[in-house]
Image (cartoon, rainbow, N blue to C red; front, top):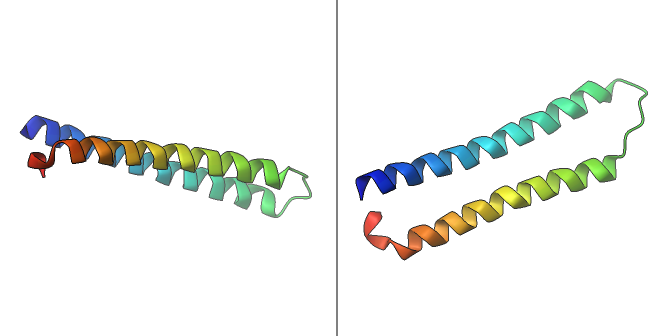
Length: 74
């Protein structure tokens, strides 16, 4: 049971880290192009960002459901 809980914490930590990395990447991308006269498709970039965040959120929801199946772990 303890090993499952440790694994669960690692999964949450990894997913949170993935979201943080994604946000950081998008932020750096905007910063990089903010002072340039370069055209890029903001709508496409926003859609890609939203899709990625939705994927991470869905993984977290799935994981929460798995934890709910094993209430004795918490």
